[in-house]
Image 1 (cartoon, rainbow, N blue to C red):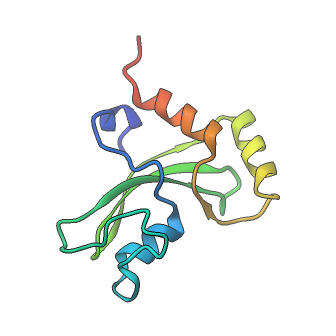
Image 2: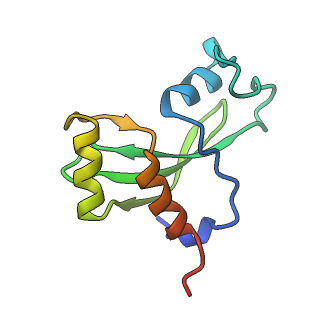
Length: 116
């Protein structure tokens, strides 16, 4: 997988959650019930967003591009130990796929920016 820096110019939908993506892009639910996102009109409509995957021993952030046909993982990175511990506490230690919280988002944004 490519490093996050490779995707520094990609438009990230920071408001997209894993469950919103499923609702929006699967054929049985292509309208967000809260109207936070525009309905999907064609296969050319897509979103780029992050999820935090906690099914493994160490949480990792995954950059996903989803359209109505597929969800493709573009990049993934393990969360730093302190951030991983804090995130796991925030979700009650539960395994799953979650949207990044504010701390994870800030860290991801720093990873996307060019290193000085």
